[in-house]
Image (cartoon, rainbow, N blue to C red; front, side, top):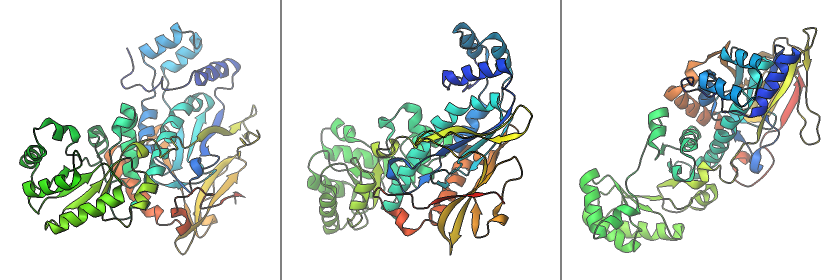
Length: 443
């Protein structure tokens, strides 16, 4: 039977064909260091946000091959019998270090470092990249929207614009990067993300009149609810909402029209009716640029769908998983790197630091070790903050990074480190990274 919740086949075939060949030629058991990093920030972003780490740790723990997975590999002749026998007992027993979830990253940042034998580490490539590339892209877009929104709350409501499982991951990533709530119930149940939602246009269309729909919603949810006022005529909808709910109505939602103009008109109408505390929420295909354009409008909250779950036009973070150090035939350590044009990498084990001046980040400092000696710490780099932490120790994940508690900790960490960004990093236009990446030799 299949291994319970197995993630073992969430991978590309060439991971296993490399494993198969390495077991044949004897290199499978060489100790290796793999690294996840981005050569550049996708979409001309000024910073990136690491997200998906807590999900990935659990998926690595569940990377086991049960009878069904092994039978598929055998029947399809993907690997030979020796490799099937090796996979029968597979569980990752190496170590993983990396940036905390919610941390900011820049080109070359060693977001994740996987240490183990070639055999046990190489087959995690696709899993690591599929999680980190998706979730970090969503979180980066969400952070930009959160910055644009300022103190006004944001809700994620894009599940219908994503795959059913990616929708849950997107809601989780958006919450880490500043969104206060999601419409997705699975994200609430699985990750502790606060959920929200009241009614769609179909609710109004179901009833014989808009007034009937509003009365039924108020009867069910109370006057603190938010009424959707643009199914028909917006001014009429506002009048009807206040007549039904009274001036204590919690909120109205606008999902169409020229939002700055409509929001101003609705605010004036609500105030004239005495509903001065009724909040205005706007939705309707918002992204960070639309949110920024509404900064001067009388809007109290935003609901964002398509744009956030698709990374606001940048659906992947563009990270790669590369071998950066390995043992040679004699057991010595060798830094390795690609030198391909525009696709080169920096070999060697790395320690990463954020340099600060008066609390403001000034650079991404990466100390590179040619051997396998102890890595630099913040002691060797005064005025800096160490960025890496142990995520998996000899196969055992850091439980503090998992589940609801891990999401809450990641959100708190993100909000704190985002305050370190220089002012220019908060601009929405395409530009170079806000911080330079500086490589130095390990002390």
